[in-house]
Structure formats: structure tokens, C-alpha cells
Length: 253
Image 1: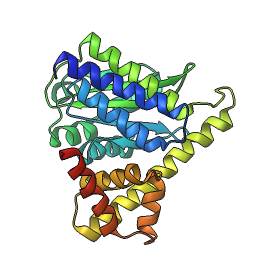
Image 2: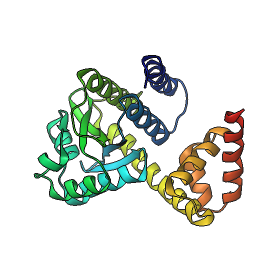
Image 3: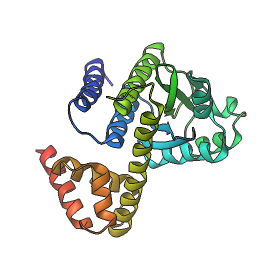
Image 4: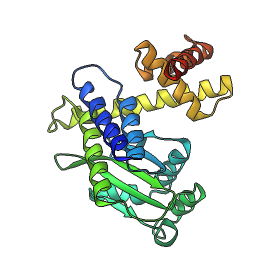
């Protein structure tokens, strides 16, 4: 990515969050946008973002594709991985060569290598010293992020934290927990909607998610509500795809 493109995408990511300070927004859609933009800006292969639920357990909320999601879920199932270490310590954890240096997390190491990832960079999401989640970037080559890229990732992780907890008082833990739980509940609805759309039309999960997002944006309906309508059959899979096809045609012109 050239310098001008990088700067444009970085500005776009910050503008997306600024919009959430003045209008209603869907937190899962916001976090998906941020992790997708962050992945592209630093030329990572894939990314995922996890938030802690009220019990302190990390849950996947957004990912750039299904392969990243698989590795994230493997970490959670195994109870060990660099992203969990990042959350526990509240500091960035980088594994420069998963094959050579991933022995501390054998299940994660196998899953990541199977998906073609050779390094990972986990960045904490913090609010006034309290860690609420992690943003995790996977690369297909071994090596560390540059200091500049690491700073960008941390800045976007901080922005994501603001987006999740905006207009909330950090010292009121019950409010923070409620907001995080809403994000996790939204993710469940969206996963169900993706699955229903995928099954109905023979789409991949990535294609189904893209179609749901397109309908959400074209019709100004929150993403989780669109997913609920799909699973509740108050909107057909064909209507979702018609909106998605219209959006692609418009962008092509």
C-alpha cells in the first residue's frame, strides 16, 4: 500500500469512529470496519477483535474472514494463546515466528500454521488501565511489525475501545459490562443471520456477511436487526441479495 492510500484509509477509520459520537451505530459493524481497515493499513493477512464478557472471558466479536475466526476460536477453546496473554498482561504480545516460537501454545500453533499464518501481533484494548479486549493481526510471513505500524495498531485499538464505550462512565462497571454484553449479543444474532443466508443461497460465510452489511447500509437498518429479520424470515434471502447486487453495481459505476 502506498503512502497516500495508507493515509486515506487511516483517516477513514478515524472518521468512522467520529460518526459514532453523534449518531446511533451498530458496534459490531464499527469493530468489523476498524479491524478490516487496520489489517489493510499494516498489510496484515487477517485480523480479529475480541472483547471480554462480564465474566472476563474473551469472545470473538469481529474478524476479517472465516480463517482468522477459526484461529481465534481455537485460542479460546484451548484456553491459551498470544491474544489471551495480551489480555491478561495488558501489553502487546508479538510472535515473530509461530512455527519456531509458538511452542507455549501448541493448539494455537497448529491451527495458525494450518491457516497459513506465520506471525501474530496482539494489541490490548484499554480504558483507563482496564483491559476490555484485544485486537489481533495475523501475517502470512514471519517477522515483527515496524514501530510505526505497531503504533498505528495501538491507536486504532484505542479508537475501537472508545467506540465500544463511548458516552459511558468508565468507573460504573455495570454500565461497561452492559455495553459489552450488547456487543456480544449482537454478534450471536449476526452469526445466526450469516448462517441462515449462507444455507439459503449457498454462499460462503464471508459472502453472506458482506450481503448483510450491504443491506444494513443501503436501508439504514442496524446490522443485528437485519440478521434477526433474516433468521425470523420477515425478510427474504433474495431481498438481501438484491440490495447487495445493487450496491455492487452502484460502486462499479
